[in-house]
Every structure is written in structure tokens, then in C-alpha cells.
Image (cartoon, rainbow, N blue to C red; front, side, top):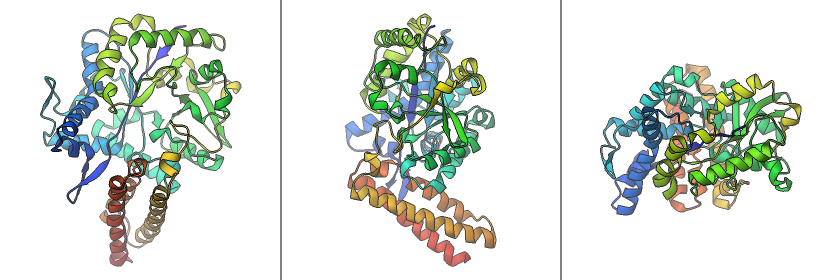
Length: 424
């Protein structure tokens, strides 16, 4: 059977301080006096609109594209705010950008079968480095933002989940807790890096194809959830660029290998940042996405991931015992380990600060709610806490980004102490 090819784009832009205000890093780039940075900012803005632009174009020409998208909550909020004040009223190579959120909403409303949005963390937190008591809050806040912007109907259609940086928590108890939180929030399936599979390094190429091209059931204690794996770069390297002919060549190879293991079609899901680097800013949509679904659409199948699971693995009942999967004890990410978030004294110091202030917030929150109920200051502090957990503040391991996170923590700490004095 023909393979199902389903490209996935992950979108995120952190908040930084412009003067004394927390604003989108995208705004900082576009208003920069550095012409290269300003131009890249404009290209990134176009990248956030590209899914709507190309899905609309292809549908109006009679084609049926499919794409999976996840946008962090703070990116959605930033795009909404910047669009409302006409910040994107500029052109990139003759194309007016305009209201990005409006473009996404229109396409999602008119062609909902073409785009599947999945949930993620509100602030793009790295789950293995984030206090467990905040995991649920991160997901709830993303849902609040997405539901407010796109509406309850489209929020109800969100079934999958993207772990930022595909960061999988290690050890069974943490992973079990994550699965429970996801299911409590209505998530039906989870996307994972193939590197998270136990004994991944010793798997043959054919075994890797078998595992990554079919859904599996992740079981931990009494918790379970269907999982779908990202196609690794040596199958389709979406981030580096891969022309349609090469993708089709790989899909045929996958079909041949996968047919040895299953009569069902293989599912191939390459996933990458949607705005990171020249390929994703300039080449992916005109050189890969459009020709794939316009010129080669008879040579492969495509659907949303939720549709695929429903069609071939309805209600998870057909995920066979041999397709139950075990993950590495120490967890994983899409670079395999956790070193870019949990290695080095400065990174670990930030993680400890966030853990400490999270504990402090929740203790004060509990006392205030018991004494006077929910107050506006709690909502503001809670949101700052989630923002402080943004992975970018530790990932780059440079002073500028550490300082952004540290300033947020200082403001948050003052808010917590102010609430304690006022209400306790």
C-alpha cells in the first residue's frame, strides 16, 4: 500500500524584554537596526503565515494538501497582538503579510480537513526540566489561548500533543504522570522522537522503519496512550531540505520495507521547526510542499494523523501486543539526550531557580485561595511562572537568554511576596 506522507511544522518564538515590557522576539527582530536581523524577522513572519497561504492556494486549485501544525501559546498570543495593531502590514518579496491569525483562522474554518493543529506547552517548556506540578498548567493555558483565538469547535478537534524539543521525561513515574496529565486534558495520542525507544541504538534500519511508520501503545503501569513517531532525518530530512523526488524515493523504500511487517500502509511524519533556517523560511513550501501535493499527489497518500489512526487503528483496539513500546529509562529528545537543557552550571542553576519559585508560588497560591479565593494577581503570577519556564532561556547557554529568564523570575518573586503581604 502507498505510504502516508504527513509533514509537521513546529512553531515557536519566545518572549524577551524590549525596554521594560515583555514582547515577542519576533517584534524585536523586525524593528532591529541590523538589516539582516530585520529581514530575517520578516521572513519568519511569512513562515508563520505560509501554512495558511499554501493550503488555501492548493485547495482553490483543486488539490488536497495535508499538514500538522503546533504553535506555542505565547507565539499565538504574540501573533494575535501584533496582527491587531497592523504590525505585519509589510511585504516580503511582493507578498503582503497582514493579519497572520486571521489567515490561519480562515483556512482552518474553510478547509479544516487540511490542517490538524495539535496541543503543546503554552510557553514551550522543556518537560524534563519543568516542575511536574506545572505540566498541567502549561497544557491548560495553551488550550485557553487556542480556544479563545480559534474557538471551542476547533479546540475540540485537537487530539495530539507535541512535547517541545520532543523532550521525553525519564523514569517510569514521571512518564506515567505525563501520560495521565495528557489524558486528563483530552489528548488522545502523543508524538515522540524515535530516539526515545528502548535499545534504539542497536535497532537495524528495517526495525527502525517498522517502529517509526506505525502507531504503538505506550504502557506505563496502569496508564497507556497511542504514540506516533517522528521520521528520523535519515529517512526525510525536512529541516535541511528535501525535494519531492527524493521524498518519493524514500517513501517507496519505506513501502517496500514496511510491507514485510504489516499489511497496513506506513505512516511517514517528518517534523521540524517551521521557521528555523533558510530552508524553512524560503524553500519548504514552494519547493517541497506545493509540488508534492500538486504534481506528485497520485504517488502517495496523506491525511491528518488523527484521521489515519481512526481509519487504520480505530480506538487503539488494533494496536497489537507486539506494537506496545518501551521507552528509555532516562528519557530522550529530538537530539537524543537532555544536555542542551540540563547540562552546565548556569543551566542547572536556572532550573533550580524555577523549581524553587514554582514551589513558593504554589504554597502561597494555596493559602490565598483558601483565605480569599482566586484573585487577579494570582492569574498574573501564574502566567509569569509559565513564561519563566520557556526552554529558550537555558537552551542557548548565553548571557542574553539567561538574563531574560532571570528578569522574569525577579518580577515573579516580587509579585509573590507582594501577594503574601497583601492577603496573608
